Length: 343
Image 1: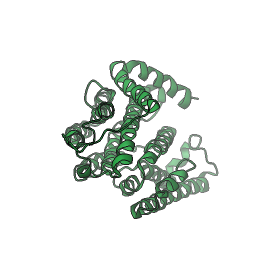
Image 2: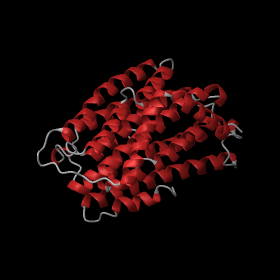
Image 3: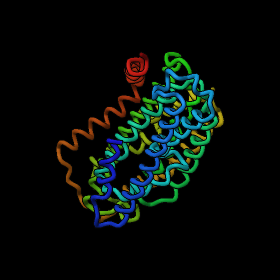
């Protein structure tokens, strides 16, 4: 919550636009609803067990009320993750925000909630949430992809792409039960996927910042040829789009391949849905590239500072490097998981 609170103000700072205030208000109200759900579930659990420690009260999960409290808690986290159909706030929050603030809104809160989500699921190995998460994963992949295809605002496309990727991330979660050491590979793959997607998102948004400053719009129709005379920004945009689309040789391809390969034995159906939606999603990534790179004589040169060129170059190289040497990062993530989750 401490991480999310500044986001409410960040979205509303552009008070010249009604959609900024609307997006901020929706984000705040839904965030409050999520928080109420979390507090309510904790209260119910405390009433039954007299403790707030999940892992030391496994016996309490025989009670229906405790199971219900835990499901409410997970729903509260899924709202914050923007898993469909609990994602009705994210497109307005993204569209209402000035692009620089998307760097915070789309990364830090999501990472914190995802970490908490995994931590909580692992603490309660006796509850089988496979079917429950199956539904959220399926609808997130399908509906996120569908709505991304029907939008022209790049920020909304990014929002729906985020929903789709939350669906991918949820696929292997039904296997994350029992001893963590036996499931460290699943967690390593999930966090590797999240890491590369966050890096690609940061790179993508860093280019959008320049486009918004220059053209004061994020509508694709008004950005035709915006990058046709800007080779540096073009390279950064291509790397980010190719990575988010999951194409080789970037880390996006390796991460998605590993995620689907590991998850196939868990839910072949969801993996095939993931593959199909991944192929379909190529269209809206291609559409962004097509509009930005079409030849436009009116396109102007955009000046990019040295520090931004350097930081974006490092991000691009890291994304590609992760694609060629995934085992290095997977090993680092594995040891991090053991140190954090295993006590």
